[in-house]
Structures are given as C-alpha cells and as structure tokens.
Length: 198
Image (cartoon, rainbow, N blue to C red; front, side, top):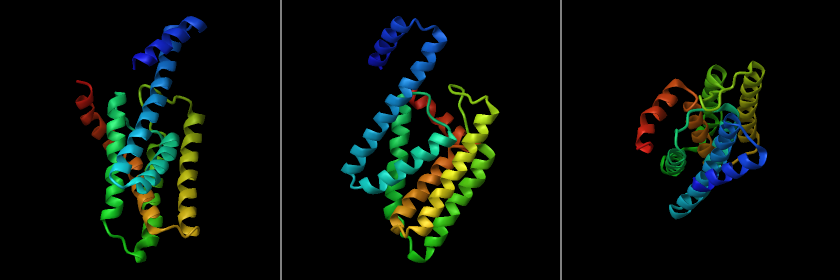
C-alpha cells in the first residue's frame, strides 16, 4: 500500500487535488489493486488445488454480478483478498465434491437465478458507506442491469447446453453473491472484519 500512497501524493501534487478528491481516488485505486490481487490469489490457489476451471467460472460470474449489484465487502484490502479467494475456492471445491445428477440440470438452471432475482429486486444495488449510491436513477439502472445479467445467465445455460459442472459452479457463484446483498451477508462480513483490522 506504500506504493499507492506514493502514487496518490504524486497525483495530488500534479493535479492539485483537495482531500475529498484524494479520498475518492484512493478508494478507486485501492479497489483496483485489491481486485487484481484477489484474481491472482484465486488463480494461484486454484491451480495448486486443481480447481482452476471451476474457480474461473465462479470468479467470472461473481465479478460481473457484483459489479452491477454491489454487496458487502471487508474494510481492508487483505480481508477482501482472503475472503474473496477463500469463498471462490470453497465453492469450486463444493462444485466438484457434491454430486449432481443430470436430471437436476433444469433445477440448477432456474432455481439459483430465481432466488437471486428476488434478492436483487429487494436489495440491489447494495452500496457501502465508502461508496454510497445516492442517485435514484443510477440505483434503478444498476438494479435493472443486475436483473438483466441474471436473465442472460439463465438463458445461456438453458439454451447453450453447457456442461453440468459449469452450470453448477456458476449457480454457486450466483447464490454466494446474492447472499452478500442481503442484511445477513452484511452482518456476516461485519463479524469477520475485526480479524483483518488488528
């Protein structure tokens, strides 16, 4: 994070930024850095555990859905990386360890997105104090895009005849991200935040 601070000092001096503008840029830069660290951590861990393909499907689904819908996240970059990587790896492990019969493919196609649609309708976009969404038009647009995203996933898995493991992995990713939109999801992250702020 020292590199980020040095970058912010340089940028502030060059552009003559005030404290509020600097805080906004800091949040953006830290978010990008944390995201890249998280992706790298997932790639390395999943390769070591032979869960790469499942983890990539889950990560891809979560990242797109999360970008539109928001959701709870840890207050520290380390927490975001650790929790994000752990959740993806655990879901990837479950996707190959819990047997799913082909006869349940329709259930996997429809049930998780349906649950997520209900949660998205009531809770998305789930903003955070660091990045509040006060514009009602923007909130409506993000909620609509989140719903469209889920509909596209459902249509894709229904029509493209994807392998069951991809549907299963993606469904687990959708359910996890939907959980992070709910008060229960925010409460869960709030309880583990102190672990990473010591």
